[in-house]
Image (tube, rainbow, N blue to C red):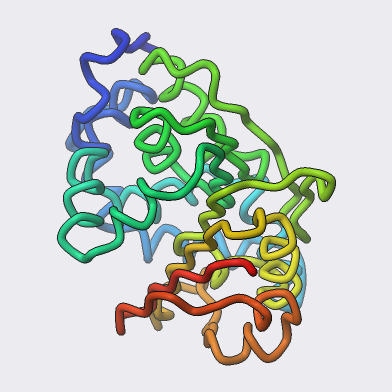
Length: 244
């Protein structure tokens, strides 16, 4: 794989970054991202198991095709920050305390962005294709001090003796095996006075990866989340909770 010059490509379009990472032509990467739903469907049918839960455990740990779904919905680090600023999210994220847990951090763009503004970042992801790309991206940005934590896809595996000032779960709960158990674990690791940011994406009929998740069900099933204050709701599936 081609090594990336530190800093210089940090805000390049993510399709370009993945082409550099993988050695694939940019046109091929772009086409695969555009056809991610079809590719995912084909691979999903090959996964062992009769239930969504069984198939998800296999898919996220074994197959590279998960990256094309992520690439389809990603732009660049700079554009991600601009989107947060436009939608009123950025001031909450940037204004939180020094420590950040990016759970299900995917390609690593948000973790990199948080590190860029001086946060101490823990990136947590299934030990699979997305994590391997994110580690390459952090190293290429000169951000080797981002802590990388691996978790199995079946359930979040976090050090419960630690707490973070800001916990991010962005477009991840609809992909996990047990969203309620996952959000309860995440809510427990938020510092007193800290923030929990949730972004919940709607299911896509042509893509089998996303389960329908309702924030009302998460609140009803998670005592720790229920004890938090809901301080921001955008109306498009994004929420900020503050721990007591």
